[in-house]
Amino acid sequence: MANYPVVIYGASGYTGMLIMDWLIDQQIPFTAVARNAKRVQEMMAQRVVRLESATYEIIEAEHNVESLARAFKGARVVCNTVGPFVNFGLTAVEAALNAGCHHIDTTGEQGYIRAVRDQFGDLYRQAGLLVSPSTAYMYTFAEIAAELALETHGVDVLETATLCRGARFAASGVTVGSTASIFELFRSEHCYLWEKKLVPHPPGTSINAVDPSFVQPVFSLPWGGTSLPVYYQNDPRVHSCSSYVGFYDNNVMQLVHGLGQKWEAEYKHLPRDHQDAVIKQIVDSTTPSMPPRERTTVVRTVDFAIGRGQLAAVRATVHGITAYIATGALQTAAVMKLLDGETSKVGFASACKAFGHRYLLGFLEQRGLARATVTQL
Image 1 (cartoon, rainbow, N blue to C red):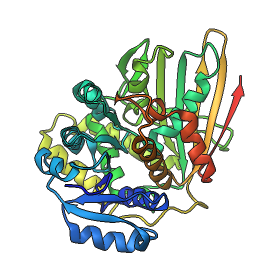
Image 2: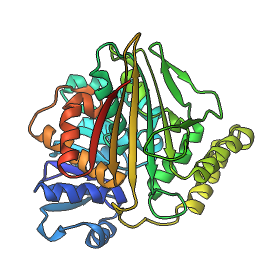
Image 3: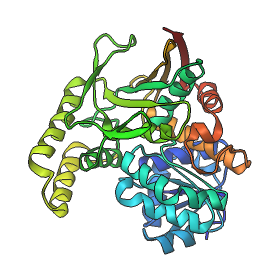
Image 4: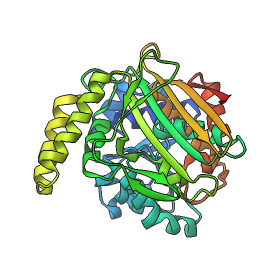
């Protein structure tokens, strides 16, 4: 049972420890939950800033609903970072519900997000609790841009892009968990929203995203579809929404695209255990260990949304830095609202819908993590 109001599940991982950094900064006590308490303590001692001033505890739990529900009980909010979420996420969602906790997580895996909405959205609403996937750099920054675009009267169609410079699979920047989630996307549909219906992208879909922040177009992929088409499907303001992701290293993105094509041609129809072995081999060969802490001089992000209506047209852009550090900030911004009982939504809802895009943008701006511009087209 947790003695503190916030649980970090996945406490020995890169993102979990960055959330701890921000909770400590805001003097919020927390419970770290993981399978191995000794490993968590060792990793926290190496990586968590100002740990000596933190109020926290560590609880061991197995990854099943009963064990996690016991560990979460007594807390008010669970921050879940254990992925790939399509494989592990729903267990924690169910456990948090059983323990009477809000649940926020860090993934944009579309298949998982749809499952959370369909299987747990009403249950969380009936319990007066929030379940909010993708409270993270991906794709809250892009959603902030989309919400800024929607402030222009008449906009009902959104196209978004998430572009990041400095995060590379073979070098520092992308965590082991994120890499596993990225390649797990090969097994799922990548959907965009078209006239209120989720429609699969054709296999091999790609675009060249153009933004004035970059000299050359950025080769970008649907990246599993992202969370935004799902979040906007039932939003009466939006008829259609498509989202893309690109790293400003076109060679790396072409490599990922090629692996996706190879999956379609060679691995798609293999038994699942054979597919698991393929994904494990890819992950092990690209991200062998936890990367170092992000550097503000290297990791830069640009998320933009183009909004259109019959005559309206607008482009909203959010420039940012350090995607994983910003994720820790967004999780903490959400925690602060939930602990204060200040959420405009319960049930299944995005961070922007639950807490307000202007609040989240202001939280990031005040800490030097983002700035936004809006241009009428």
